[in-house]
Picture 1 (tube, rainbow, N blue to C red):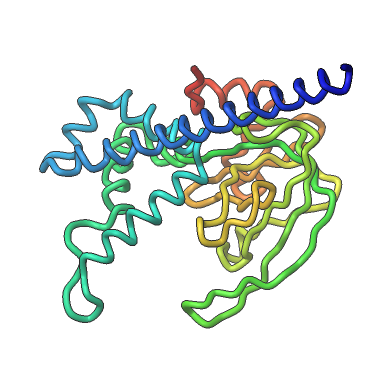
Picture 2 (picture 1 turned 180 degrees about the vertical axis):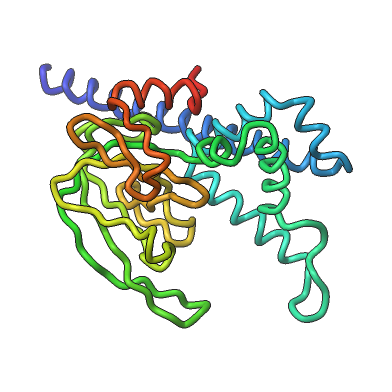
Length: 264
């Protein structure tokens, strides 16, 4: 009898997990569908900036939630939509019909940036922001097939000390791999990481086609001066010394949340 009860409990537990998973998948799909439906609707109008400004809070919220709660699904859907757009043209004969999806999305972001600045927009589209301790540094090769070239890739094995954005996916104590390509930076802004030192930075996944698991992430510094180092609980920015916050970690996090997070 005890074995039967345990078996029934196990089956029930699995069914609950399955239902939760199905619900989460549906919720993520809805976040992405809402964003792209909105993009298609307002970019059919001539005055995109006017429409965005009239719906500024709604626009910010839709973009924020798609990137924050469904980053992988967003990449997949943008890739699918882009391929669909490309299929309307013939290479070397006629261009695809209409505007490239990523360009449509950029037009909306440009309007938000006019009001709030690009730093705000870059954090709006950043799925993860974490404080980590570097455990190990290794080197690998990144192959770029389109250019038929190879580049050095740096991989940082890190332990998460705090999750400012991305708690739906990561927890304190998790180990992640953060990668970047040195050629993205000029010689004066190239980040130098040290083992056992503590940093905070924005992260995203590799592109949909390069995606290989939740624990392999990409250093997201496009348009941001946001590589932070924390020493003796004081936050500073080694890539942009003149923009160093020079404040305690708790104070930095509080200011960051007020400025960049849109929690429910």
